[in-house]
Amino acid sequence: MDVHELKISCQKCRLSELCLPYGLESEELDRLEHIVQRPAPLRRGEVLYRAGGSFHAIYAVRSGALKIFSGSEDGHEQILGFYLPGELLGLDGMDKDLHKCTAVALETSSVCTLPFNQLSVLCEKIPGLQKRLFRLIGREIGVEHELLLMMGQKDAEERLAIFLVTLAARFKRRGYSQSEFRLPMSRHDLANYLGLTPETVSRLFGRFRKNGLIETNRSLVKLLDMSRLVTLCAGPEDAGRLAAVMN
Image 1 (cartoon, rainbow, N blue to C red):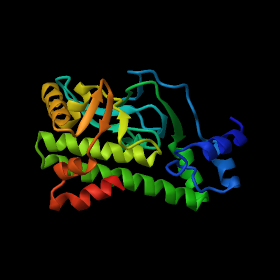
Image 2: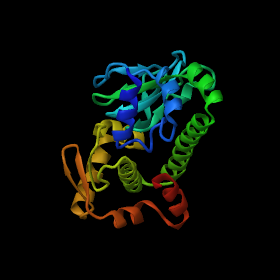
Image 3: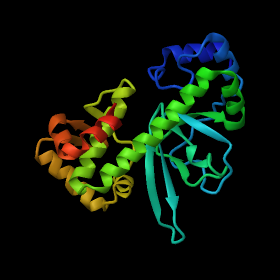
């Protein structure tokens, strides 16, 4: 790819403030361009990397959505997270150079591949890039930590409210509507992530619709009363955690 295309795409992209190259000087973008890889888009169900596979790169989602999950010996799949445009994944492999989970596309998705060895060398030469990378990694870890703490203490209704409110905030940061968006994951995957049954998730969506909190049309969700959803998912002790995840 010509570096001019990289600059134009970054300048015009609505994710520019979330993107790794954001804030770099022209010369620094030139150097980054030489290591960034943009493979063909993944189709729904295709694997980006597998648990046990060698760690070679981190990935920035450009479009679509992916899920990561771990598997047990009995074949049970535990979904650990969903990733939207502007978010990094693959960080699980940094510790021992082996991925601990599997990443799969939920829909047609594209990623930027950042070969880690080359990125590490470049970070030593471009302090701004290193600072941005560490900040993004720190945010990913911090958000996951806060979500786990909140989810673990809540009942089924509160977990779904937390998920919808925080997902709305993630869409807002990307310049999309925070009140109306499409869920890229299936109800089964959402139930798995929330630690609920698919039947429970379906009942909860029905209850939320009946109570005037949301409207749904298949995968499309419209949040009708954000303040009530926030009240539902966060008690006084959770206000700080919820703010950390949403901002």
